[in-house]
Image (cartoon, rainbow, N blue to C red; front, side, top):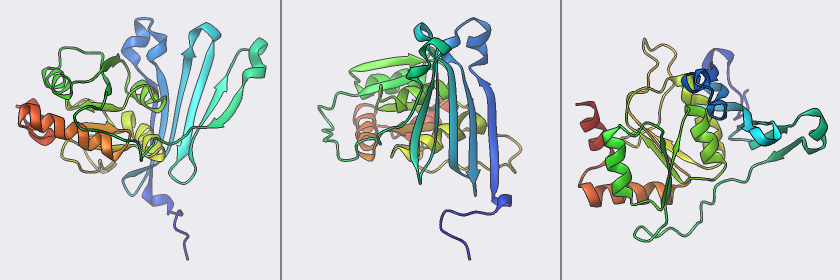
Amino acid sequence: MMFEDEFYEEDMTIWIDPLDGTKGFTEGHLAHITGMIGVSVNQRPKIGVIHKPFYNAAYRQGRTYFGTPETGVFIKDKFPKKLRRLDRVISLDDFDKEEAVDEKDYDLWVCASLNKNQLSTNEILKALKPRHVARVAGAGNKFVYLMDKKADFYVNLVPGFKYWDLCASEALYNSMGGILTNAAGEEILYDHNNDDYTIKEGIVAAKNQKVYDTCTTRLQNELNLSMAEMHERTLE
């Protein structure tokens, strides 16, 4: 007999990215880097750990995010010795699923790639009519930004993310009640048997279903294209 949250070892895959944001790191942009450990079970994210060693440079503060869908997400802050009294472990509040979201008037805050040369992303951002767009570097760092509730929505239709770039982030984001799919609105499968671990079907993340639906509706209304159709155009 197995309990609902139990699983067999052979159904588990561990995805590790010891240094995400390598390019920024070599250029001295320490605020962008993270280390990630994600565990998928039956090809879906189950456990996530993201460590951001330079979370707050002014206080030499590091922060670790960890959690599962069963427990929710926790953060552990780490300070230098003279500020050790500020070290803490606390739980993060889930995203508000009951938030009032008006498709026409909702003030959307969007997280986007630091690369401004992605034509499809720029078209989508214009169609979404966001109040604010934050250009954020690093795969894990983008989801740190989202989990800190600094943005409501993130989209990337350009292939480039690997499974180890996203598994930990999706596990944590889902654990807070966030929605993450590919461009077609389907779950992303982390299949270790694949020859190529690149996520080619796009990434769409929203803090709740209402925001997800609002963004896809705005895109359809403004461009007369679905997210899946925009993704197909990106690959042409």
